[in-house]
Length: 523
Image (cartoon, rainbow, N blue to C red; front, side, top):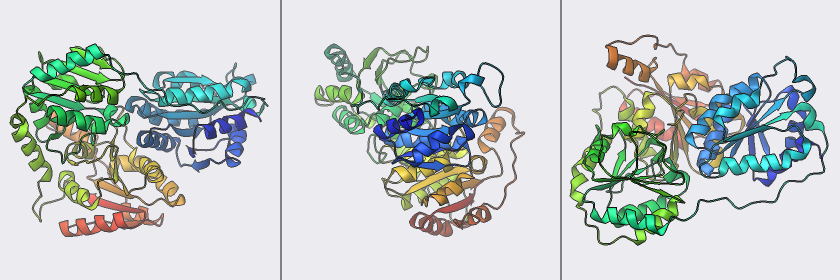
């Protein structure tokens, strides 16, 4: 084999079924190797879309999504999506082409130090400067990307190396590397704190979902009768119809934050401080237990008293086994739970203008618990994170590490390919047009998901923040095309409801039908 063929054989050995990317001159050997493999190459309309597709694939499946780009501008266009996977802890492997080694020591056409560019936003990255290191490097890229805590890795393949032959073969399949069991002494200390607490509370973070520890978390909170507040990326770790759920941090006019202030013990599960600033919890002096696969970040506002550093599921199971009859009084958080539940379930008057918060109960009703909502970033993301009840892990995908706009439409492509459920990509008019061209990719792949576009002709979240600070906004106003006409130009069904009756009817028709777009003007 040549190095390109070996790289593709290694991808097959790693279980890769799709590679998302945009072709380039320097990757001809690699593209033809993919053509002759079992892997499906998905040509996209922009490399950022490819990276977002790989990002969401990794988040949903736990297996690294793969994105591909050429050198120079192709590689730089991947950066935002790769950085999103890095901060969201999504397993992703990026592969970029490069010019031949013989021209990289001088200034040359489209040549950049791509390995240097990717260094700050990857767990590991390298140049494949010898065909005999390809098998080891691909294996390492996947091992690092998928091991807890996961993230992005990057491989650069120079054009001349791609064509060189090698006798090497893909390394054997491997079992995933998991964190170890918690120490008995640490579990004993945490169990003692839980037995003494009157108002203990749990915070479910991204890691609780990412490590597939939702079942163990459910057993844990039931055994100790703990209310649970989720981060935006921890939604679904505990179902929101569970009587212990306080929905998400910041929801219900601060009910979850009020509960944290009232609690006399806080147990965080799979939480990273990038998800939500603990300085907002106002729980100075309250003991904090950190349950995660890695030690807590050093931060003045988050200084845990005990850190359980182990496999998250094993830690929760060990704690559950130590539970006695709960000494807590579940009534202490009952009013907060009811306040947030009522806020989320509130139905606007029939004649009221549409708001994102008012649309979400209808959208929730037309989707099954296992259906997947992929949220873009903007003011609608805040509403979805706070007001969209989520009943199963990984069914509400919110980016809250890098929090990059433009993820929803390409993310919908990845979700549609990865899950056997209905998929809705929810976006604002700002984020939609950033990667709207991927609708063509979706139709070419015969995808069948629904894009909901909330339009307000504004970068609304920024405008809200400006008005809150200064009383006015500037630089945020937009104009938009006819989104329905745009969708129909791809052969996609479009809807634009104007009444609440039409809203329900149109959302139901869109979800039940094929590829569709629903434009909803919101105030």
